[in-house]
Length: 186
Image (cartoon, rainbow, N blue to C red; front, side, top):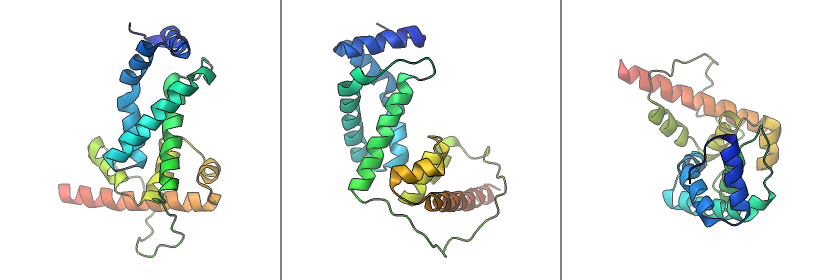
């Protein structure tokens, strides 16, 4: 029982909405790896990631009846939104992120384009994961989830300019790490 494409995804969704456990297993097997990567962008501890994923999939399967198939939206994007929201709830509940308004220890760097093609993707991911939690959270929401600073501010209950400054500082820290890495490579 493999589903590919929009018609098959629609059938998978319909089967899950009817309580078909085999369809739920297919969805889990298909998307668990990706959802783990999404959650890991926000939460570092593997045990916390597993807990969040478990809560997310429970929420996905219990709320699949509310999912409405649309041509421009996919099950994967709906599931991703749930995983991101559950990750953010975890961070808020555990008070693991804080937003620093003034940081003197990180110099301002010009917004120059850096050539990141020489840095392996896994290494870039580690650099992002090494950012302070608040910076990393805003960076991920802006870059990977495509949220605006206004949307991020609403999600995180912060000011819009705080979101923008967190993002700017995250970019500066990443730029410093990238330059450092490129200098070591030469």
